[in-house]
Image 1 (tube, rainbow, N blue to C red):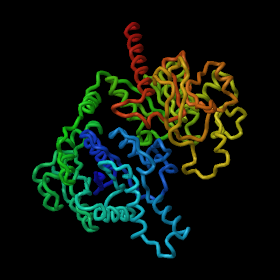
Image 2: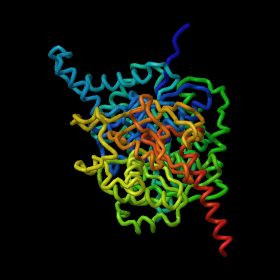
Image 3: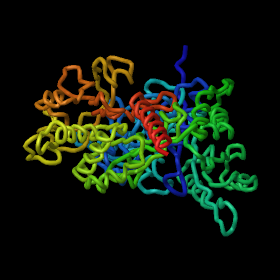
Image 4: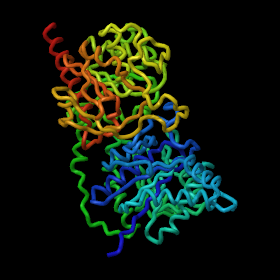
Length: 548
């Protein structure tokens, strides 16, 4: 029996960045998965950083961590959520990692004195990364090329995928180009010329798109579709409309109506005989678009001016909200404006739940601690994530356990009471990139705890990204004062989850549960806070009725 051949789908973008290539690729992956095919998705980023781990969230948004400990682009989060498959290190490739590998081999003498060049050495390395991602022989590998056609830094990637079409053989590779049709209100029409130029640029380097996915704010008239087909050499039926929608989870359904998956299968010489099973996905979209109620939850952090910095947290709340018939109204709370407790109180006065997500550095920390304190003292449902746990421990140590000057050695190296301290294995680490506790680790849940109830399991595996931990020297005194350590590492050295049993919902994790939440399988800890926020909202309403 001959081995099946993986089919490759390359997604490029034109006209402007941030068009949603990742959502288009993830949506296509969802449609293929719904037909029973195996799919993996890969992101190629043209920047020279080896990975996004050292990049500011203000520049690049969230760093998404995989089970195997890779710090990756936030698009991998969308991929995992849409195709419901765990991805890994091989699924995110940067120009920096490609050049690093090639230069390392050159320094070792692997090229036997030959001249090392962009072609063939860099392009060969890129093609090798494609083959590595497809080593498990999925039916489809969808590869998104970051950036915009015409960017200088993206040229080696485009040249590599041009070559790859020849290497993979006829009928095994197609190209999808995602482009923008801007709407000019003064003219009252969508303009196709920028897309025409974008495709011409792509064709000038040897890539002819098989399918166009056209982003627009308005429906695309037939005349404009015909014009695009004529000037880009793409069949009319392969010009796909992708309008702005209420939720990203609606995109697969819209593209299914536009017959995107059918066009892909046709061009890859695969008969489309399977009826896609999208019933659960349709239910999720319906729940998101038609919620029974609304609950306001605060996300308190340092990067609130760029929501992409917390994209997985936002999506995890949406997943839980959809499952519970609730729209999550997010209130962004800048923690650096809450260093005064009264200001924190003002910000949180109208919310029914609080999430304090992860982060690094001292800015906004005292504000986060005030936010934790207000949540604890006023019985507001609270979920802390990574740094959120550390802030919760500091707040409890100061204001409940009476540990004067309690702090983290990250924020105050000379603190007399470092209730949060550097992990032992991190003490002599100087490089910042990829040196934290990263990836999936086992956690044991203690009996009769909120965590055990939410997970309904004794042992869990969650993804981490941190250097600091709860200092074991203070664990006993914190426990004596009422803090429960409900999740512990297998060797009992690391605190993974804390909680307060006499609170409406007060729980924090050292790991990042948001990285494992999926629309079809919301994360238990986010289900917990949304449910608690609903209950808190109901009680507030009941009290208001009684007092009126």
